[in-house]
Image 1 (cartoon, helix red, strand yellow):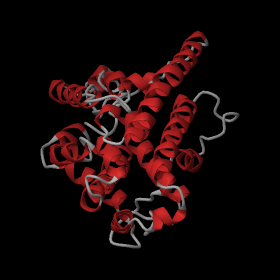
Image 2: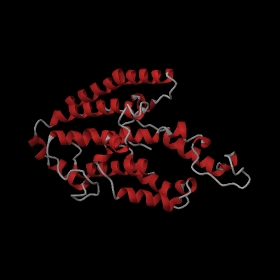
Image 3: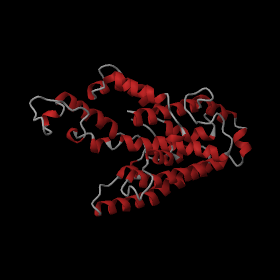
Image 4: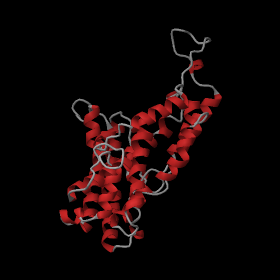
Length: 306
């Protein structure tokens, strides 16, 4: 609940709402970011009540019910930390950044490759329009966008800057946002169909059934039909839908320079990053490990769509 809804969906919503409020539709950042915001507001407006309302999914699936789910989400919202949501910072905070200590961790290893690709794309796109610090400082729409999100301005996200002071800082904001809506959300959402759809593999509830032996696990401890059907329907609806493909929107951009950057990075993803990740996953299988296909570019949407 916290990693998925609070740290991905709700953080992305704050950014995307501010984009709509403060960046004109002709703004060069809006021209690109609208494709990465597409879907998140719809998913949140329609999905949050279906998750958190009394008698809905979280109430049916989890022992803590809709009240517990709402408490988890609201508690996380009070401590949202923009810097902590970055890919590298998150690994360090969770103590899983050291490959020597934790050799097999595909999320970290494949995520580094994907995150570098997103940072490279961001750098190339931003430098089209922002050559020097003054270009950033004089962008009043951009400054209003930042102020609305930051807890030190009008928003609620800690360590989001109240103003953007440099080209480097702007690149950091954009690339971190792209990681949240592409990498982070993909990692918590799309594996659901492989791991949670099969109820015995990851039951959302376990029952202390008096018919089951007290000293060992039994099928009688698993959920019955109604909860199992709900779990299957819920996870399959979340983990199978993709509206688009990462960086597939070059032809929709008005600026020729922007089209070139987006298309070049789309090709780089599919001609360089994808074959590399496929080779890495084949090696994992050969070594007896599970593959991790979720960051292969063909499976990555532009943003949060379910």
